[in-house]
Image (cartoon, rainbow, N blue to C red):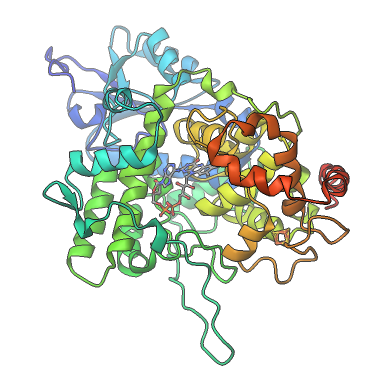
Amino acid sequence: MHDDYNMTGSPNAVLVTFDQLSLTHGALAMADPKRDHVLMVESHSMFEKRNWHAQRIFFFLSTTAHFVEELRGRGFTVAYIRAASLTQGINEFRQANPGMPIRTTTPTSHAMCSLMIKLGIELTPNNLFLTSPEEFTQWAKGYKSLTMEYFYRWQRKRLNILMDGDSPVGDQWNFDADNRLPPPRPKKGQPPHLWPEPLYFEPDAIDREVLLRVSEFQTWGGTPDGTWATTRSGALRALEHFVTHSLADFGPYEDAMPTDTWTVNHSLLSPYLNVGLLHPEEVVHAALTRYEQGGIPLSSIEGFVRQVIGWREYINGVYWFFDSEYRNNNRLNAHRKLLPLFTDSSQTHMNCMREVVADVEKRAWTHHIPRLMLLANLALLTDVEPEKMLDWMRTSFIDAADWVMVPNVIGMGMYADGGQMMTKPYAAGGAYISRMSNYCGPCKYDPKKRTGADACPFTTLYWDFLDRHRDQFAGNHRMGQQIRGLDRLSDLPEVRARAQEVLTALDRGMM
Ligand SMILES: Cc1cc2nc3c(=O)[nH]c(=O)nc-3n(C[C@H](O)[C@H](O)[C@H](O)COP(=O)(O)OP(=O)(O)OC[C@H]3O[C@@H](n4cnc5c(N)ncnc54)[C@H](O)[C@@H]3O)c2cc1C
Ligand code: SF4
C-alpha cells in the first residue's frame, strides 16, 4: 500500500472494476466515504464485442449493482457510468470532475494495466491475492522450471499453513495419491452415494432488474437460475456451505467425474474469489477452522489448501512472470477452428462431451477435470487454435478472467507454450475418461477401441496426436512411456486413417 495515500485531504476517485468488488482490499480499503468518490464504468465495448454466456453477464452486472448499493449505503458517492468504452467513461468522469485524481487497484490483466498507465490512473498494489508478482518472481529465480509442487511447499512454509515447525503436518506435503478416486460405484442393492446438495440463491429485486437487462445483449447459454450468489453475504453462505457439507470428501473425489452430480465436492467459490467478493485468506481460514474442529481428513484439507494457496496463486504468478505475448503461443502449430460441439452440445454423440458442454451451457461452470481432461484435452488432440479455445472459455465460464484463463488454457490445457509451464501435455485417451467417470457406459463409442466405427474419438485422436507430434515429444523424458506405447501399436496406419474420419466428422458436428 502507498503510505502517502491521499494525504492532501482533497477528494480522490477510486475506479472500481468488475473484478475488484472488495471493501477491505485494494484501493477502496483506504477510501473515505465522506471525501472520496467511487467510479464504475459499464463498458459497452466489453459486453458487445463477444457472445458472452448469459450467466456470466448476469453475474457481472448483478454483483456490481449490489456492490454499488452497498457502497451508497456506506455513504460513498458513486458515479456508475454507462459508456461506449472504459476510456470514454473515465473521460466523462474527468469532464464532470476536473482535476480529481483517479486511482485504482492494479488490474489483473496486462491489457488493463497498460490502459490504466496510459490514462494516468494511479495504481494501488493488488492485494486480492496472497502472493505478489514480485514475490513469485523471487521464488521462480531459484528454480530451473516452474514446478507448482515446489511453489506450493514454499507457500505452505511462508504462510505457515498446515505446518508442524519446518515439516508439513502429517509428514507429507501432498496427498494426491489418495485423492484420485473414481466415482463411487455402489454394488447392486447398495444405496447410491450421496453428494452434497448445492445452494440455491433466491433472486432479489436487483437480480430481477438485472435479469431484464441481460436480454439487451447477445448471449448464449442458460438463463440465470439462482446457481450463483450475487452478493458478499451470498458468497459467505457459499463458503460456509462448502466447509460444512463438501470439504470432508473434497480430497478423494477431487478428480472424479460422476454423472449423478454436477458439483461433486468442489467448493464453487472461484467466481467470488475472482471478483473480490471473497478473499483467499478468509477462504483458507474458514477451511482450516473447520478442519481443526475435527472430522475432516488431512487429505481433504491439504487438497483444498493446495488449490487455493498453491494452484490459484501459482497461476497468477505465472501470468505475470511471462509477458503479454505469452497468450499468443502456439508451439504445436494448431490451426483448427473451434469445433461446433463446443457451442452446441447437441452436435456430438460423444456422451462425455455432450454432457459436459450441456453443463457449461446451463451454469457456465464445470469442475477442473472436465475443463482439463475433456474440453481442453479434445481441443489439444484436434489441434484447435489455442486463441480460439481461450476466447470460447473466456466467454463461457462464470469465473473466467485473463490472469487465470491464459496460463490454464495456453500452458496447462493446450501445451501451446511448448512446456514453459507444464513438463508434458495433459493428453489422454478414452481409458482415463472411462476410469474417472460414468460417461462411457451409455456412450455409442467404446473407450477401449482406437479403430472402427465405434472407436472412442478420444482414444483414436490420442494416438494420432502422439504420432503427429512424435518429433517434438521425443526429447521429453516425461513422454517416454507414451512414445514407447505408440511404437508398440501394430495398427498405426488404421489409426491415422480413422483419425482423419473423426476430425472431419467433428468439424461437421457429426461425431
Ligand atoms: C482449461 C482450464 C481453464 C480454467 N479456467 C479457469 C477460470 O477461468 N477461472 C478460474 O477461476 N479457474 C479456472 N480453471 C481452474 C479450475 O478449473 C477452477 O478454478 C475450478 O474448477 C473452480 O471451481 P471451484 O471453485 O469449485 O474449485 P475447487 O476445486 O473447489 O478449488 C478451490 C479453488 O482453487 C482455485 N484453483 C484450483 N485450481 C486452479 C487453477 N488451475 N487455476 C486457478 N485457480 C485454481 C480456485 O480458485 C478454486 O475456487 C481452469 C482450469 C483449466 C484446466
Ligand atoms: S467412449 Fe469416449 S467419447 Fe464416449 S464417453 Fe467414453 S471417452 Fe467419451
